[in-house]
Amino acid sequence: MPRLNDATRLRGARDVASEPEPDAPVRFARREASLSPSALAPVADARRVEAEIRQLFEERLPDDARDMEISVTGGGVVLHGIVSSPLARLLAEDLVYSVPDVWECHNELVVRTREDTAASAA
Image (tube, rainbow, N blue to C red; front, top):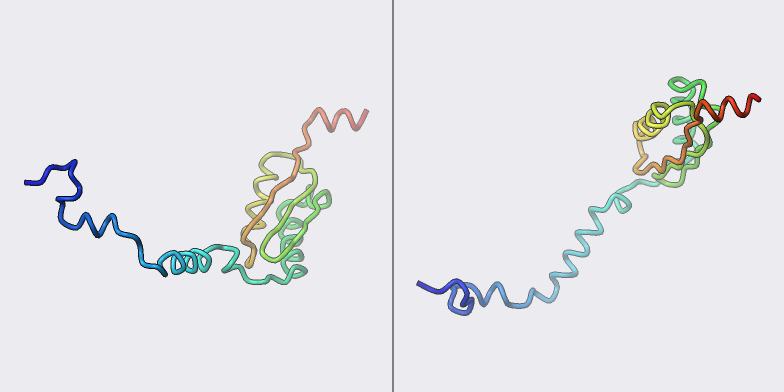
């Protein structure tokens, strides 16, 4: 029986320690690139995507929709602005991801606290 610490005596150890095929890294890199979301993301019509998001916001977040800015580039969306609650902030991101052709959302919405509202009213 071979000793476990002596890899040279184990059958197949030469195959494990041998160098990979010369084209293996290229195949892996090609497969890796073809599976990344950015490689698969279709070029989205930014106006259509923005209009769909704006409509969803006006239906589901009517009080917060006017204070939000939406930027669409390809399959990516960036949200800027102020919302009334943490729940509205999360709902906005969920609504963005529900639109076809959106692969990424950067939610930069800020929650307006009660203290901010009281300070601005004074």
